[in-house]
Length: 186
Image (cartoon, rainbow, N blue to C red; front, side, top):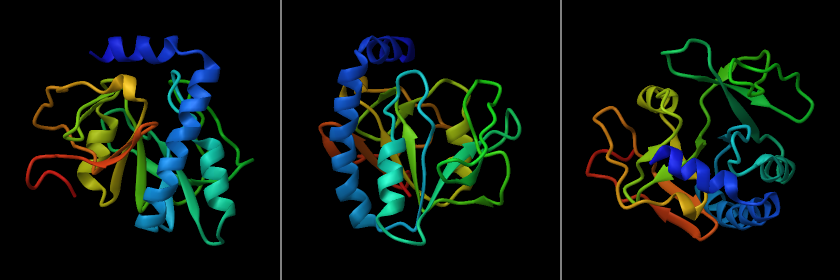
């Protein structure tokens, strides 16, 4: 399921991904305006994921005091930490070739935008199989918003006991509250 979703997304022409990402951003605007976070965590685009960097730049510029943060993998089987990001901050590559802030205090974002490869209406997602977001969400009090393209929507991701559902799902088609099981959403 993961590989199928990745192949579908990576097969999209760059112009199509950019257009879908713009539509996704308009839906995120409304959700974030409702949630009113002071800090937002997001991910550097990887393997044709929605590229939210311009959206984050605009969100930062719209009001003073806002903070954007990127994940940093410190240990392979440990939760990630988040460090503040601003355009131009030094960004070395991690072992997967993903840029991350080189230094800074860790913080817990009010809202965390989590990439979706495959996902279902209950808010469960398939990432890349490393469990980084599941471990992180298990210890972090934040609102998790899954962000991805509709082509990754599946009837059921077949979640395991350790999988953490998203609170919200945002795609180019709109935003919806996840239909996670009672007690599973934060």
